[in-house]
Length: 255
Image: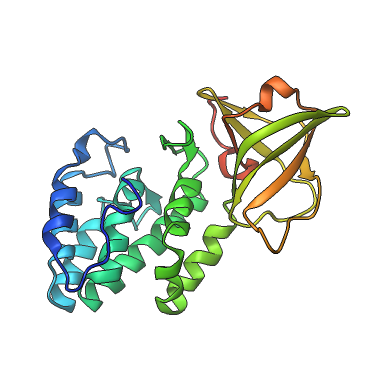
């Protein structure tokens, strides 16, 4: 779903969001059969988008938290949460305040549960098997201004999302026994050396060695970075490629 799918407007027009909800076949999205209930997703999202107050918002939130987007009793999060994130953020921005607070709480739960989920991966426009925590974090970063203005919970969500960085390789050159990769960093690189996983041409490869910043990241252009990847070959890192924190996907068996 594109970033500007729900442009800001004077007054809340829930029709646009309702069309977007109905355009998704939620049953086609994967999820454990004993936990994921896709029928709850469209019903819950429609109810939340049109909720006029606390009671309706709470009822919608219960549907979405009880097997729609997450399963709060087991701490599970489903790929549907990533697909629904732009819709929830639109409700945060323009829906009834009680509905917005419920949507924000669902996003908070989804990211918190996703941090503990090392197996679930989702397809995105920039990689085919992204750890669900990183995919959710990317959705949140796209609406940083909205979350920053949404109180302490919104700011905490942004801070949590920053740990799930993503580096898009735009150019790579051989450098000694490794590669210098130039590109764009989203999130906050933690510094030092870090394990990572490389996504390129449909393959997910954990780097056998760690990588570190090749030069300090610029305060003036924080999104532009150059990372040195020791022990990697140029053909492994050549763009288009993306790097994610290795700890986020370390539980996946598909390498």
